[in-house]
Amino acid sequence: MPETLLLTGGAGYIGSHTALTLLRRGRDVVVVDDLSNSSAESIRRVNRLSGREAVFYEADVRDRGKLKEIFANHKIDAVIHFAGYKAVGESVAEPLKYYQNNLDTTLALCETMPQFGVNRLIFSSSATVYGTSQNVPLKESEPTGCVNPYGRTKLMNEEILTDYANANKEFAVTILRYFNPVGADPSGEIGEDPRGIPNNLMPYITQVAVGRRPKLYVFGADYPTPDGTGVRDYIHVADLAEGHAAAYERMKPGVNVYNLGSGAGHSVLELVRAYEEANGVEIPYEITGRRPGDVAQSYADPGKANRELNWKTKRTLRDICRDAHNWQTRNPEGYQKS
Ligand code: NAD
Ligand code: WQD
Image (cartoon, rainbow, N blue to C red):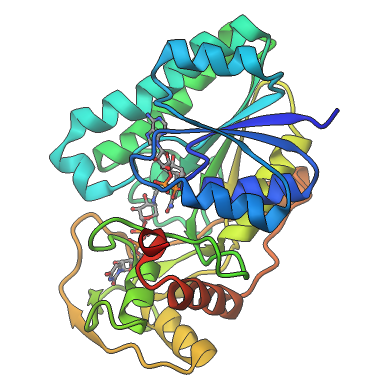
């Protein structure tokens, strides 16, 4: 019998790529997603690409009744908890929405999983928990500290899960701190599909590339970095998906925290140039002021994940740019027009 993973938020950007990787590796996948930031079309395409079938429940993870029904219907071996809201600016404007959803989804899982003997959980955390630290490359041991409500929900979730695992020794938690997930499956069938104006750099660039937006605004060119623009660790979403598969395969007792990043930092202008070169397009841009809350540079020391999960990133910045562009040109309006 294949092992079965429950993916909360599995219709979303990272969840759908992880579902594809797991299905291709012969795991069974159950997805619960309320589609608040995604489309069921992503799951239909994952099924087509993998030639297999993820079971899909359209439901809110906080709905304990529905969650019980899902655990009763399937023999779940582990949960990967992607579900949550992720827009930093929105979290500042509507903090309660973030605390309610991002924390209560985790509480609902912790309440329900033991009732069905499920005691392995992998949690989507973020490099945002390192706050304003500039101590690059960032190690997992770096002190945490968040600067916005979204980030605080990630840190609080890490703490809630750690407390819960300390009190329940059979409960194992793997916390994955993602750096900057970008790119798409090389098929161009699934990818990142933000609603409204993209908050993040790569989807903004891809939308400029297909003419949905006239130009990119580069938020600051006066940082203490080689070209003055912000430096980040961009990780191909397919590498990230493989990181989840590795984390599941190598899950250990207790609480274990891993950075998932490439270990390399690239500036905004480097990414723009790499995108132009990989795709033969021009990305017009204008340098504007810094975005509040941004740090000059953030990139991972992925050594712990390399060693303990036997995982490292394989895709290059060029692969990232090619695959992101392929997804956007095949789906200029995202999943909407499908
Ligand atoms: P996403 O918005 O594409 O996916 C999240 C999914 O969760 C969406 O499909 C949404 O509909 C669903 N969802 C939200 N609340 C729900 C609820 N109460 N019940 C059921 N479904 C719910 O985002 P993503 O980029 O795929 O991110 C996945 C996870 O990784 C999130 O927890 C996010 O905070 C975290 N993360 C993302 C990034 C990033 O840059 N994309 C970086 C670090 C961490
Ligand atoms: C990257 C670089 C910007 C947009 C965010 C969240 C973080 C995590 C990942 C979830 C920065 C610059 C951006 C634009 C620009 N998410 N930029 N013009 O800020 O590193 O991380 O997403 O956990 O929590 O904060 O990613 O893609 O927004 O920005 O110049 O239109 O691109 O200033 O230097 P960030 P990003």
